[in-house]
Amino acid sequence: MRTQAWGRGAVARLMTPFNRRAAHASSPHLLRACSSASYTIALARLRRHFTSSASFSPAYSARQDTHTFMEVVQEVLRHGSADSVRAVIRANKKSYSLVQLIAASFDVYNILCSKNMTPNGMQDSSSKGRNGTGFLHGARVGIVAKPSPEFVAGVFGTWLSGGVAVPLALSYPEAELLHVMNDSDISMVLSTKEHHEIMENLSIKCSAYCSILPSVTSIPSEINPQEPSSNEAISSVSTLITETNSSKKIKGDDPALILYTSGTTGKPKGVVHTHEGILSQVQILSEAWGYRSEDQFLHCLPLHHVHGLFNALFAPLYSGSVVEFIPKFSVSGIWQRWRESYPNDASKSTEAITVFTGVPTMYTRLLQGYDSMDPDQKSASSYAAKHLRLMMCGSSALPSPLMKRWEEVTGHRLLERYGMTEFVMALSNPLHGIRKEGTVGKPLPRIEAKIIMEDGAETTTGVGELCIRSPSLFKEYWKRPEVTAESFIDGGFFKTGDTVTVDEEGYFIILGRK
Image 1 (cartoon, rainbow, N blue to C red):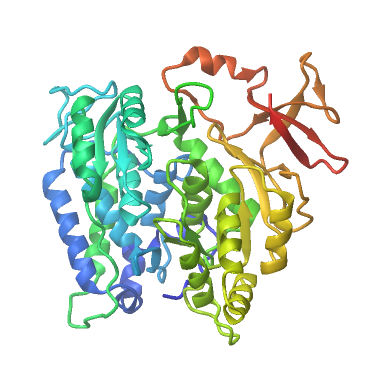
Image 2: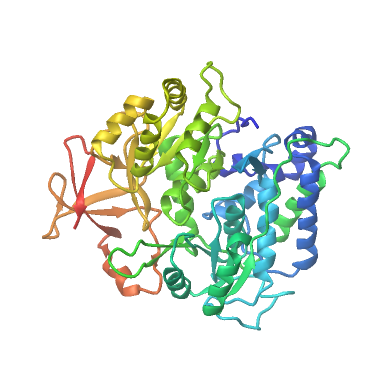
């Protein structure tokens, strides 16, 4: 499905199928993009929401001066353009539009708001709406799903409900999962069917609810022109968004997401990100790396780390890009997908991948796979890779030999950047300009970095600890006020614990941990 060239406007370019006025003007486009069978299912979900949650207190009220991701979504649902119904997620050779994602998000909303959950993780029978509290007031919701549209709907539905999303790693051993669930005081776990049994057992140990994530309806490959128009569903979504106005509004500095550190220096710590911080970060990344609606990302990263969650999912969605999930990293699958995108005959697929981001070990394995190919396959693979717009690398140091070999094979000088769970991304080599080997570039837009020596003095040429001030800085370490306070210096700069220096052109070089 060809990407539409939307105007600049970030989320506005991806959430626009739901504007009622635009829908009446463009129903032929809508019918071509999504079968009305899909809309019938979505509409049925919306009707269920209307009948079951009329008295629920909503999480968001869209305003022009909003500072939260989901309020931006809601504003755009009201005021979108006419021709933007399209796939925004692809997985398992199926495509998913925002009408399907939002319908499933409201299913999640219903599940969460039908339970009696409170911010302290305990169940309470007071302050109910029709079937429950109707508003989670920051209660934590664990999400267990492979990279999929269900994961996205789980996060969106949690935010719509006033909850805080806590992605849980599928790779965590049981003891670590229990630590995260208990430490974050999770009230509910949303899990896909394949993980439901084990998560239900763990939820019992944490006195939390457990529910299956609703499936997301995909866009059918064939359209039945005899089916009813999608206008009714679009109108229902528009009305539903209007109905979610309430005096209980989420503020920009309210918690939205808790991600846990790797725990290399002790038990993993919960890092609390706010709605405003999330929105700031995706705006920064989209600007710095030129994300756009024409981009199509190939995503094969875990979703409990900032790399996979922000760089490869939230920021692309904000920019109107398409995200294609490969739930498990596959060397042959990635090379094949690139070859499908750019056949060796000068043509280009309508679903061609344009951006890929990974970690150094992924690129090492991709080169090993390349070296095992026959000459014809090598030629086709190299040709295809050279046609991607952007390739990035991070999460650990990029060895010089790997960077050089990758450039020889694909023509891409990998864009290396630097980030942490506490602030997502802060430094980056440029999209346009010199990407210097052995460096992580310069501060991203609206981010400040300085180097503090052991005596507490600041240096611009020497060696010291990197400190970062950013609009996307985390709010706090969950339930650890002392550790939070100790992590900052005067002026609101966060102490990263990384020792750095800068070269003569201002590029930062990571020397190691302090």
